[in-house]
Length: 114
Length: 114
Image 1 (cartoon, chains in turn yellow, red):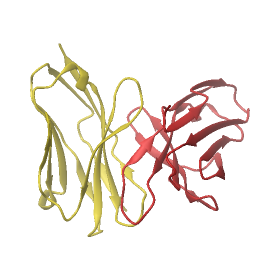
Image 2 (cartoon, rainbow over the protein chains, first blue to last red):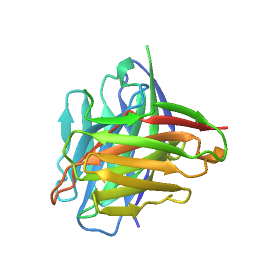
Image 3 (cartoon, rainbow over the protein chains, first blue to last red):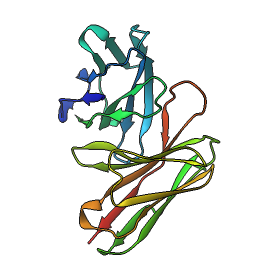
Image 4 (tube, rainbow over the protein chains, first blue to last red):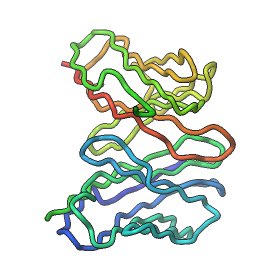
């Protein structure tokens, strides 16, 4: 069985601070995929990134970066110089290869104050 | 127009009533999913379908049923609604093929059972 833990229920920061959202996963599969989704106050979930288990390269997209470490079963998400528009609930998800069924974490609510 | 649509967007119903939530997609995806979101619990899978003739139970299918009327349509029914089915419901689709792709979510249906 798969498990995704997002231990931070809520994080509150002031604009321009850097913030890291943690995601720890458990799986016995050797092939799996990790995802991050953003749910802004409007409610709709938006895909941010997908990573497969064979690619541990970190990824940067603008102010967003992701750190995938198989040794610690973590896939953490960092927002640099946070902005009010980053306020949202962020979900990490794990999908075993070939299953097409993701397991979601409980989400981390990020509040960025002006 | 949105690629994944859900109707209704909001619904208030009484205990014991039958209710149907509808999902339509224009993405041409075979895979469709229904989730519910409760505060602090993340997204939990109710049912999923990988093609028109394929229906599978998810983590929390009790009290729900589904119908895949066409590739583009996937409906969720609550045969006899109860208050603990009050939640935000999401339909999602994902791409076909052998790879793990991200999910595309509808805007959600907020259901209140009184």
